[in-house]
Image 1 (cartoon, rainbow, N blue to C red):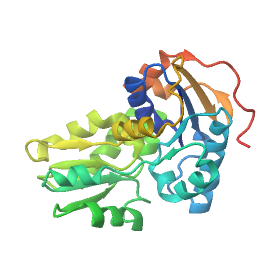
Image 2: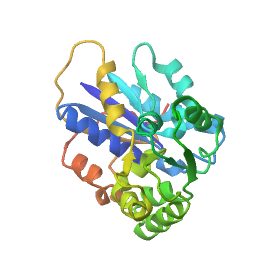
Image 3: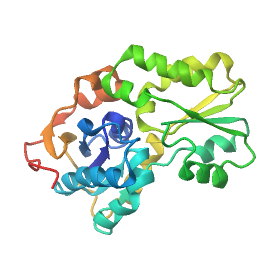
Image 4: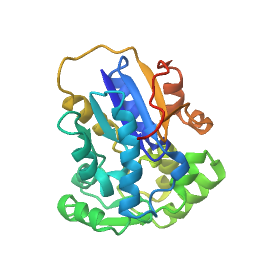
Length: 266
């Protein structure tokens, strides 16, 4: 089985690590374009073009399913990505886990990039799945970039900024950016002193990984557990910052794939 994941940068590590736990044999293709980050301030047309480049590069390696492991790309480009690949290759988007968080009944905060916070997309999710839970949108300026570059001081500063704007007594935080899942423990520690008893943190990686495996069609081929990394369509290695996160270290222990990646994003 071969599974492709795309993101602007290393935010895809969380879903990739979740897939590795579920299917250690699966061959993973990690397609991103970190030089173009951040995607949040870009226009929908720019995000779509960048995401299509990553997807086309991954599709050239014939995956069984593709995961859009990026909230911004899921918001702005999912329809275009599905039009590009489906029905031949199922495309799985990433949606913030508002519904399970709100189902617990307490106040919920959604941490997301400034461009996603307050967006019609996120407001629609709150309307459709927030139920009776009070939901607060919390912008996290700079956090995704800090995570991407492994800048510990900037990560702590961005988390502290968002934590100070999270209401006391919050029962659950939904992580609305895949990069944030790589520092979930640091977010939990920063918020815990003011959070409600039994406070929970909700990412999307586990649910997305399970959905990707459910959507695979055709024979269940055993893979070799390899990892192929593409940056803007070109063969690459996981960036040094990936070693700062447990998810990245887990993938670095996998076998490298043969050097057969496409020369460009197409």
